[in-house]
Length: 143
Image (cartoon, rainbow, N blue to C red; front, side, top):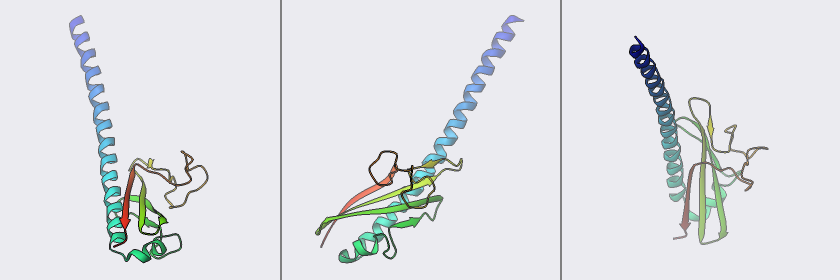
């Protein structure tokens, strides 16, 4: 009788561990899927910028330009922002940062309200801009 109780207790512990692993794996799958969507959106936006005329990039993809420096993800729930460093007239550094939310409601990136603006309390590292693990940085030279 004692052997059955010990075996049952061990089985319950193993099953509880397996359930936790399943839940953790499911969350990682959601994160991976959302991260893939965010990177794909950033890559598409980078290609759109690369296909633009070099001299119009800064004006078109800056705040107030058209199409502007923010975009909404077409897949999933997220918002991207474009930063352009034009201190060198012949070489632009373009950073595309995408913040997004998971099905659980957790937001990945500093743009907690997904509005594309740096609001109070969002700049957790104090660098004066939004950051996210879904970031693409590229240098674009004038041809």
